[in-house]
Amino acid sequence: MGHVRVKLKIANPTKRQEAVEVEDALVDTGATLSLIPRTLADRLGLEVLGQIPAQTAAGEVNLDHSYAFMEYDGKQSVSDVAISDSYAGVLVGVYTLEALRLAVDPTSGRLVDTKLLLF
Image (cartoon, rainbow, N blue to C red; front, top):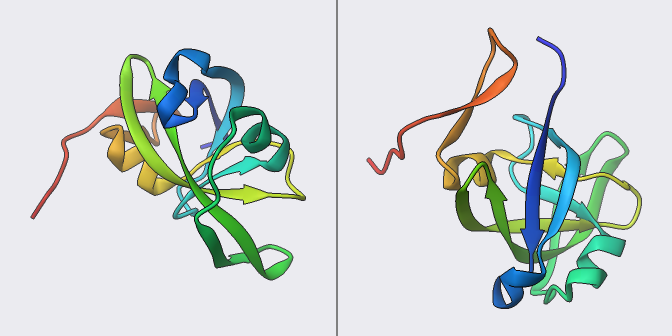
């Protein structure tokens, strides 16, 4: 299966009408949180809650932690995000996929609906 890229909207949860459409967000099922670049976080006016340690390909780093409104194909949720000063793209992590009730179909390489599992 190759890379899965999707189009989604991201916004400050308090300003959803000012959502930014991201054309080529990379779905990363190996990432816990979604990752957005600092430039986008600043543009959206996201509140930084603090810092979180994260393991990356470059080693362990501390990233700013926030939350953002996410919308994909009509499904909406607010999700934790990490803010990156070094990666310019948007990564969609597992927490966001779960919150939007989505999964990657390995056969088609696309996002498909899934059930929300609570217990």
